[in-house]
Structure formats: structure tokens, C-alpha cells
Amino acid sequence: MYNTKVKKLFFLGLIALTTMMCVFPNLDTEYFVRAKPETAELVGRYVPTAGTMKLIREVGKYEIGENEITLLLKADGNFEMNNMPDWWHTDFGKPEGGKDSGKGSWRIVAHQEWWDVQFDFDSREHFSSDRAESGLITSVPIVGDAPLYFLWFL
Image 1: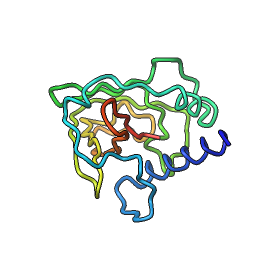
Image 2 (image 1 turned 60 degrees about the vertical axis):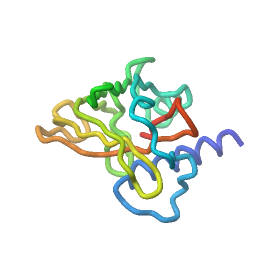
Image 3 (image 1 turned 180 degrees about the vertical axis):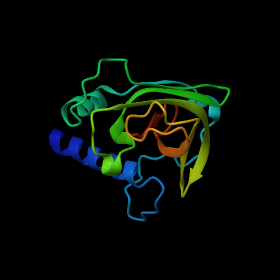
């Protein structure tokens, strides 16, 4: 049962990742935040959960140490992402073994009936998945019932 549940959550996360900008009325969004959180409730340092690290290593085959993947959401509206496995941004969430890092600004945005964190990257020069001098605007769902929230990258 555990293995099926992990696969289901991974699959749902993969769908969320690859369809962030699309409208899927049947997408299972029960975990997504429906009441807008306060910006201060999201400020902080984010790292993958133990379960996510297991998926990153076993399913994605990434060789990455503890605390290497970080996302810092700052109170001034800026962020820094370090060593995010590239499958968060590759076609169909295909792991390619690289890591993406970047910085820019963030804000909370409405997405249908739920709330996302929108990231406006200054550039993609430190992306292995899609390197470019131009920036990138993307968003990820906020997950949870109350603070402490999670961000659904996977």
C-alpha cells in the first residue's frame, strides 16, 4: 500500500508539475491551499522532505546530498533556489541528472480556486535544464491546511 501511495503522490505531483500553466478540471487538487496565505507565512528556507529526497535519489537517480537543495523565500519578495533537480522544469518531468539554481522575485498568485507561489527568475544561466540569459516566470502550488506550508515542485 505504501508503494502505491508514493507512486500515486509522485504521479499527481508530476501532473501538477507538467500542467502548471494549463487548466485540468479533473486534476486532484485537494491538497492545494484555497485560502490565500499571508506572505509572512511563506517566508523561510525550504528543503525537500525525507520522502521527496527518497524519490529524488531512487526514482530520479540524482546523486545529491542532504541540505544541498534549498529554496529561500525572503521577506523582501526575493528568492534564491539552489541545486533543484532539473526534472522540475524538463519536458514531462523527465530526470536528466542536472541541477538548477537561480534567483529573482516571488509573490503569491491565484490559480483557479487555489494559491500558488509565482517565481520570476532573473535568468536561467545556472539552469542545467534550460540555460538562457532570459528569465522565466513559473508558479508552483502551495500545499497544506495551515502554516507550515509546503511547495509542490514534484
